[in-house]
Image (cartoon, rainbow, N blue to C red; front, side, top):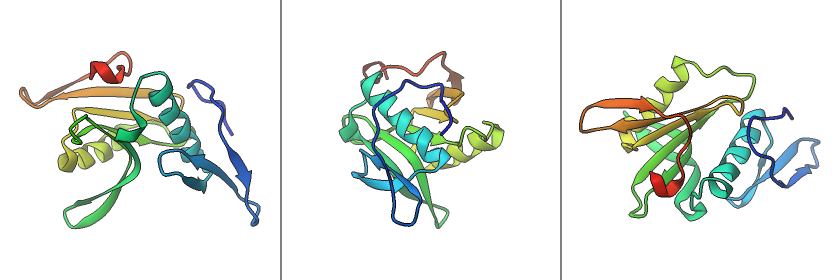
Length: 150
């Protein structure tokens, strides 16, 4: 797998009987297919937990939602301490450039969830923006804040 612009961590991978690879997802507590996007997700989630103080108990991967009658899945959703969505994270494989289309996708999810922070990463580039619902505006942040600062 590609080296990412994220901290290294100890991860568990295994080769399946069919020859494909799997990686352990600590949030879903199961083995998942090791795709380039999943490689980014597992590194990013670990960085949020280990380096940014995000409580694993308030995080979920592949969170289902319904938008205009269509079932969708958010890559990662982080709740606040009351259980309300606080952060949505969208991942792309390192070979996929983060574009306006990527932001359009996460904004559509946020129309349902109303999170205050949106993060997009392809493992090489990371973007974090804060939504201010009072002024109907948003601002990009220099870095991903620590959970306690959200």
